[in-house]
Image (cartoon, rainbow, N blue to C red):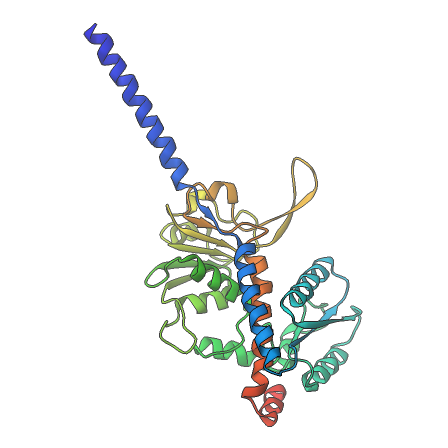
Length: 338
């Protein structure tokens, strides 16, 4: 009988341990950050800002978007932007141009919109046809109307921790981190991807001084890229408190690469074929289902960074409208010619 009682106690203890393991595993599953929910908050803030601006007697902010060619993804992105503009009270227009437009013709259109006082924000949807140099086009947009934050003047001001037009996607990532309450001061961050429009600006925002004019995250940031060996990338990510995946490689970041409780921000947008249905679907750079079992926070694709990008673009358009009061006309002309 004593042996039976001992066996029963062991079984009860085993069940208790299994229960604890299940509970522990359940508690470790990441908080899924809703970019859509955060974007709605930001758009509501933008709507209130626009209303106050108009009630104060100012003209309603206006956004002009130049769309070249017939890329379906670009058309979808632009539609999302103009719908968001209407939602927050910003007027907008989409100027469609054929893919065979010359670089000179596109530049002439940009200069015309730069000089139009009715246009507050101006963006040229990327990518552009191969015969057009994107850097030339980005630098042609007036810095005071550059709501994408791609002009060399705005990039330089961002790198100097000065107030400027921040690129919308990196700014969206920064707002996700801040509004979710994820600490950055003194933390280890890995940014996988070094593009000048996404990876590099994200790294700049996260590592710079929080006491400066444009406060940064005071984090220790490591940038990895296509020539970082996979085993070295894993070494970096395994000690990272925050991992930002922006390399454009599906399932680049897997669960074995993540530290317990880390925050994982997925910027990737990749269209892959579903092996079961045969249909194409959007995925990020992160193995979402695997990583969510180990991370503390994670953003989904779609519904994570994407909506935040559009929301921050609305914030930049309002900032552009207000810049008219901050810069006299001669300084605006000088900036447009830079």
